Amino acid sequence: MAPSSAATDSDTTYLEGVVTSSTGSWYDVQVGDRTVPSRMRGKFRLTEQDVTNPIAVGDRVTIRLAEEDQTGFITEIHDRINKLSRRAAGPRAGQEHVLVANVDRVWCVQSVHLPALNPRFLDRLLVAASARDIPAGIIINKIDLATEANKPEVMDFHLRYADLGYPVLATSATEGRGLDRLGNAFEDQINAITGPSGAGKSTLLNALEPDLDLRTSSVSTKTQKGTHTTTHAELYPLSNGGYVVDTPGVREFGIHNVHPKDLAYYFHDLSPYVNDCQFPDCTHDHEPGCAVKKAVERGDIHPERYESYLNILESLQDEQDPSR
Ligand code: GDP
Ligand code: ZN
Image (cartoon, rainbow, N blue to C red; front, top):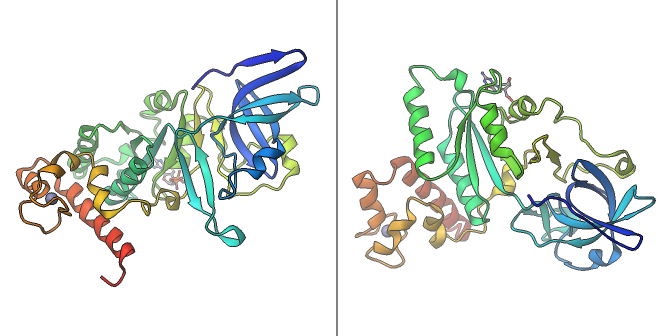
């Protein structure tokens, strides 16, 4: 993350920071280790009509200090590298609601037991992240629950995704294992955390950063004037300079923007084969001369990954044509 910088012209001070929360018309902007409650200048409100929130958490902004340097005015929103968003409901239905911008990595927390490892869920998330240009990572939590019986499955799962090039971290939130490596992986970047309920997301984050009480929001006194809206995500600053965004729902990671014919490109293990199929429009499902299926048969593609592919393909095809 770029260090925050200050520039002064005559008696005006400009600072760069990251938006960590938004409530009503106030935004908390983190500048170094300081939080500056800031408002947006009127002109931004009128641009981008199809977006409910022109500034989202994760946005990098320039602010001009006001009110004896206690608050700020947002004068510039820097270009985003990516974003997680959903379609707004209610009176603004159809408009885009940006949940978090500039995500450096989305981490999927899986657990060894209760709930069990879920490659189907994970593969959906990996496709969704890839389709949004967001790098992904995997946390295998509750490794203290690994037994002789489930160890081979856990190892296979770990290796499968590590071989695909994803960072895979094994942790036990309750026994404090793997937390140093997790902290290092989170350093100086914006991390989104997702995963099935009960996998240990809040326990992990609280173990990583004991001061971070995930149930209480860290809005500054100034912004408490506004009503706190839970539809807005919040970025929690970590002591090592990184941020975590509290559990965006699985809905934000939907794959509705993926066309069935593009799906194989988002499976990094399938994509090298797609150009070798006999038919250029091969869906890698039932067609003869399919190079992907041959790679599965040879053992070059993990059968569970191929099963995930077929599973997602079917749901995308159903979405496109429910009568099929
Ligand atoms: P979340 O829904 O993903 O936020 O999951 P929670 O953090 O609420 O954890 C769900 C349950 O799993 C709680 O009872 C935790 O104490 C337990 N838990 C979390 N991490 C671990 C772990 O590493 N090992 C074990 N054995 N239990 C854990
Ligand atoms: Zn094919």
